[in-house]
Length: 102
Image (cartoon, rainbow, N blue to C red; front, side):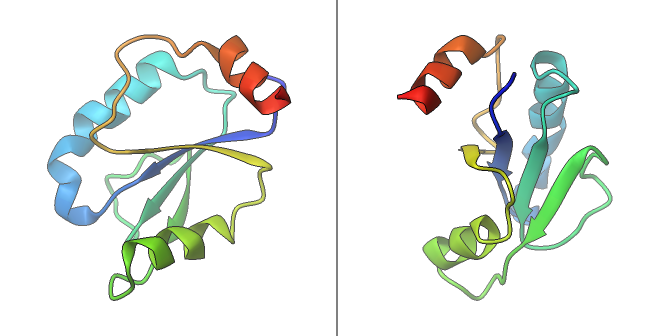
């Protein structure tokens, strides 16, 4: 993928029970060359090492949490989702790039 897109997941350690399937599906369908990040309330040993970790303050509102993480990201674009939105097939990166170009 030639665009500066960061594949990003927002989660909370309270949702760790779904992480194994999320990370397994991501590793199955997302090329290792694609940058990945996680927005999470605290660093955790169950987060794969190939993710950039951005932590947020759990006492903030959802919007403030997301904003605090997004402000730290260096990528121009973010493909954003939650831990319960795991992949079940290869993303259509050509379509994603066409949206960025638009």
